Amino acid sequence: TMILRAMGLGFALWLVVAAIFRFAGGYFFLPDETLRLWTFLSAPVAGVAAAFVCLKLLKEARGDEGEAAIGVALPGLLLNGFLTHEFPRAFPNIDPTLDATFGAWCLLFAGSILFMGLSMTKLAPEDERV
Image 1 (tube, rainbow, N blue to C red):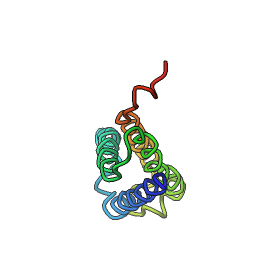
Image 2 (tube, one colour; image 1 turned 180 degrees about the vertical axis):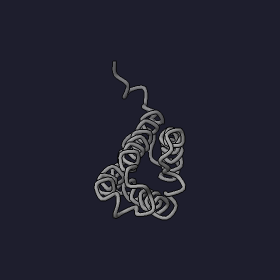
Image 3 (cartoon, helix red, strand yellow; image 1 turned 90 degrees about the horizontal axis):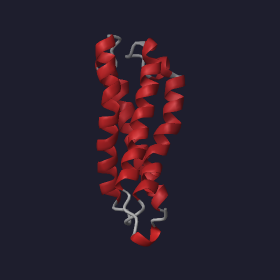
Image 4 (cartoon, rainbow, N blue to C red; image 1 turned 90 degrees about the vertical axis):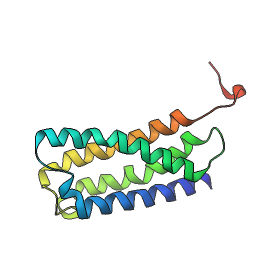
């Protein structure tokens, strides 16, 4: 049930992020090259912060942080593929040429969640093998 709880939280996180981009994404995803770089670089920061908060909320057993992070990231990975494919319909408020920027942002965001989950995983000494 831990994975299902994590996936449920991941789905809720996806809903919040998708809604923010749907209604305010035009202020975030801008075609200017310099601003696009800053937007792109914000993804790892947001992903690490989201993972930290989500994993603390889940209160998983020691050593399960990486597994929980997979559950949190999975709904976004799956659903953002659809949003990227349907970008102009999903986000009419964002310049349609920024679909690749959105897709890349989403991948970095999810990858950062996975990285943070693995970084937070604390294995018992008997679980560590070389």
